Image (cartoon, rainbow, N blue to C red):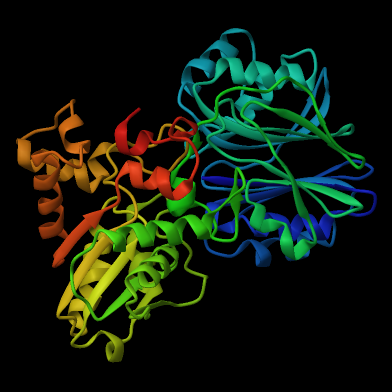
Length: 462
């Protein structure tokens, strides 16, 4: 995952750039960078693996002055990337995942290009995109060449002397939204970056759309109209509660997911709770629908630990999961608990570092409720779930079948016996009293967009 933010103003933009980029910290934990254009391009990239964006860049921002700039919080590669090319100088920041990067890099190497940067032992994908853009006759032509060549997903911001070019990926899987504050314009992955900086949402970019943003406002640079398949998981987990995508509020969707879980539930319990923070909205909806008291048996110790889903190493993910949640025995002891979670991905942290804390503190029953179906496929469009072997549902199938199977359609059908057997296996593995999931149809109902507009690859492989 990565988050993008850009701003262009009639005055110095750096304060808005600093805070707007920081509002994307929930999307990455490894690297962050800023590029500002004043009299010349100014450029800073730092690791944020062991610190927060604000503390790492506070001193840097005092040295950067300019009317336009872009920032990125990244889960993988150092960026923004600065380029001097025949179509002009520019800075580039990207979000997404290029699955045919080796093939494209080979083509560029064969044609005489070279690569200067490596990210985690591989070619920096942002540098690859920069080189493809540089092969175009203009910035817009170069971006369209990227869309033609890549497999996967890339949204991007390109900072030039003519303004900021914002391009949403070809199928719209990752969002970009434009906001206005009167004397400045901004573009962001997450609309939650806007309210406190005084921006109002003006436009959600369409799939494959390219916008040139100047101090006068946005100007479309190409024809849009491609079919949208935005990532459904944005609403379930990835996105920030205060954001909206395609005009649909994240927090509202999570409340509707919780209500749908409660609507079909029959268990008796003493309280509803969410796994902080991403399960909280789902638990609010469950409590409203069921009329159970909403309580906090587990609380998160500050936001400093971040998401255990994001770091690249399993060891770091487990450490974050263990340390960030503190149980409150007075609320847990002797209680039957409905525990809402956004999803069950790997399941190991949930089992050993969350659910076990409830049992250790006297819970009598723990009923697990997940706001989406079992994840079956690694994401092809962002760095999130990384392999089949990590997924709890795949471990269950492997154990039930005796080996990996290629056709899992009977396990994705919530009405099939195989699905029920798989859920029971996961329930026992998690050590919970009962386990239930939302279905794809219920997710579509909660989001409120047409099913064909939503990417559901991680659940169905489609």
